[in-house]
Length: 452
Ligand SMILES: *Cc1c(COP(=O)(O)O)cnc(C)c1O
Image (cartoon, rainbow, N blue to C red; front, side, top):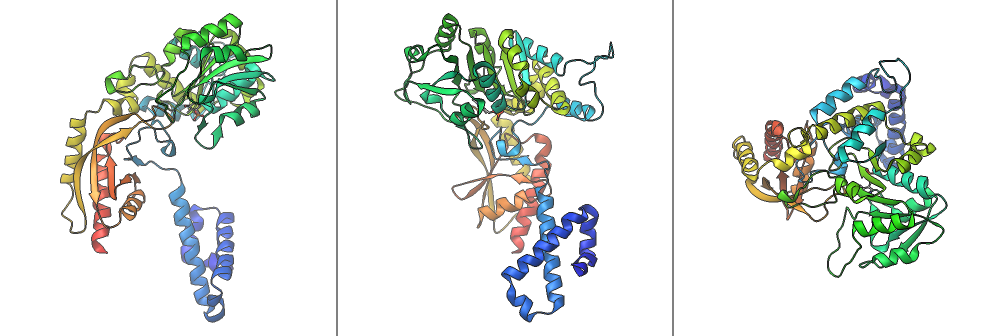
């Protein structure tokens, strides 16, 4: 152990990594050599053993460094990629986060110097934005779902259509969510067809709420039926039961010009939904958050719940959300929110950018490339099955998996995808400022393939 710690290579690692961590790595390295390489112990010199231990520690350090979060280029063609952090933030949101990272008046009224309610200003901006009476914000939409169920229907039944008992990403399944929120699930209808009278027949003295959950990561087609939003709202209001609309994706605009369609927050508010839930980092284009908008009497109940305190947002995220809401309110989303800029990019411009990038490559014997038409998807639990025409770079080589791996390990990691043994780099989610870096990454990986 001491000999490894004294080695020159380890000295460098100690400077950038805490001693306790390095000592752990050395212990693991020694244990793993003992276990997997007993021959080294028997035959080799102490020197070999030392060198092998150092090598293992250096490898561990490299892989840990690569796992640190860093900026990556999303050339997957999935615009809101959950593994890549969903919506990229607007410049205004990024700079506000930086300012709020120091001391900030998150809970102080600067006029009076007294304590103010955290996020009150943001919530009233949110409510105005969508035309609702009130709003509340928590850590993510999954948290908002738990809060709404527990806050409005603890110990009671919540009615839901069998076609909506979904599993969202990360193993998060609605029946488990109901259980953990302390409400009983009352599923009605069938997998493909649910009618308004199915809901009506299920209502009783124990009913706490009706919830509609948007099928945001799959779609149904064929012999299907579901009541309209107006029918559900009207039933709930007649029977004085709160109606929860879990929209998920949080769209504010009409995307039909792009051939895309998803439930719109403003429509749900206008239809009279009592509580509407959606994510901050999907089609809203902001940081991770769960946004709850709706009728004041219900939002107020949720605001007072101890769970709401446990799920509250930190100041840095609040700052990013405030900037994002401002951009929507100022009608600047299509100019300043990256997701909407990506939607607006034309295939002609994408094609020209791909061609310019390929101009920057030098001939290779091992690898062929060309510009190709692609279909991007929106992803991240939105617009399932819907695509957007796009353009990208197609690369044919001996080992597409290895090519993608080397692109991912480039200085600024480049994330592509493989289809039919071809490496595809879709440009729709790549801001044009990154074209030069993308070109550099391609050159470096192509050159590394030439050598071997
Ligand atoms: C995405 C989604 C959620 C979960 O949202 P998170 O912000 O990821 O927690 C919940 N419900 C629906 C309908 C969704 O689409």
